[in-house]
Amino acid sequence: MTYAELNAAVNALGNALKNRGVGKNDKIAIVLHNCPEFVIAYFAAQKIGAVAVTINMASTVHEIQYLLRNSDATTLITTTSCAVRFEPILKNVPLCRHLLVTDRTEDPPLSAPAFVSFWKLIENSPTALDIPDLDDDDPAVMIYTSGLTGSPLGAMLTQRNLVSQSALLGNLCHVDHSDLGLSVIPLFHSFGAVANMLGAIRVGAGLILMDHFSVDEIFQTIYRENVSFIAAVPRLFLGMLLHDEVDRYDVRSLKFCITGGASMPAQYIPEFNERFHTTLVEGYGLTESSPVCTLCRPDGPQKPGSIGTAIPGVEIRIVNEQGKDCPPGEVGEMVLRGENLMKGYYKNEAETRNVIVNGWLFTGDLAYRDPDGFFFLTGRKKRMIITSGFNVYPREVEMVLENHPAVLAARVESKPNLLRGEIVKAFIVRDPAIQIDNKQILRHCRTYLSAYKVPREVEFVESLPEH
Image (spheres, rainbow, N blue to C red):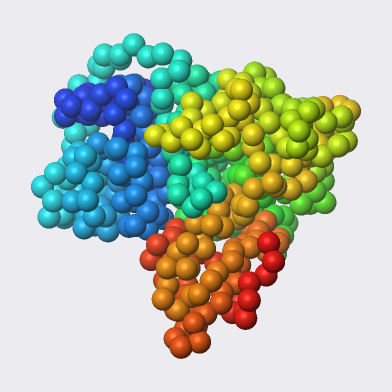
């Protein structure tokens, strides 16, 4: 798809949505994998002043129902297979009345007459679009992140947030229209949207969208298409480095790689760079900061283990428990402010006030700054597990476990894992009067939790481990 074709499709979908009554500040839920339809829907929402609510396609029916209701989504764009899964719960979200499916079929095989074809709407709509006046502080995207209490929170990112973040690839990594990126991180994820889609489109670079893939397919695509950059979680780069037949593949087209979402084991970064004749750099961010806060520059000094220096337009402090600045080398909490700071959590001012204090976002991450301004993560203040770049809040998983009649109490902890960074492990005190095993517990979790939140290990104990 060319940029002209993309723009025409975006405008046509924008007109189709406007003709159905969707407009400024309306919420459009996008539940899609990495595909052209995601990009079209995302930018169509932006162009009509609506808010794109990007949702994990692997979400359970229970999660989808909560997210659609909490976000006040009036529109759902998804695949036919997902629509079939979600159809039974749509009666519980009456506000969501515009239902689009992206499969290129004549008629969606669904009983709900409200479902219409995404592509038919595009084909039957004009490609000249009147764009409303937009303000820098208007909400543009809503991305859900689980809160400490277990309930997902909708982080509202503004037009200013997206514009500032879209400039990073070009300004800091010198990506231009001659480059080609490989998008393997889900675009619903803030890191995937910024480091792949927004950054590439801003400079007119090419972008290959991949959803399900193997490491061999990654290698083959890099070689066949002359891919020049990849932004992904450490698991992908470790998979490349530790691949049994890594020497078979020529990936010299790679100019640089960015890893984020979780920490890359520092000892593997020099080895990766030497093996693939490229530069792998780390960055740091969180959904509430749109997400990127720091980055090691590909053409600058490298300090393995560091998440880099603050990006332009962002100010970062390391503070102690009293809120005072820590000197270089002393560990404290990272707090930040700047043009990447979210507008707030949707319909939740109390939680917003908990994390944004006097204009500073308190990240909950512990770090120190060295004399050169490089930051190094050391741990977390908040209970959170990062597995393959996805955040899991233990309390959410514990609540699901404790909802099972055989579970008297549950405690969820992280366990180190080389490829995933961390995995979710559950400790369970079970009711001796009820027979239950690991498989039944996991089946119960899969009903209510996305796959990445489901414990990979379950241990039955007499009493829970100490906090």
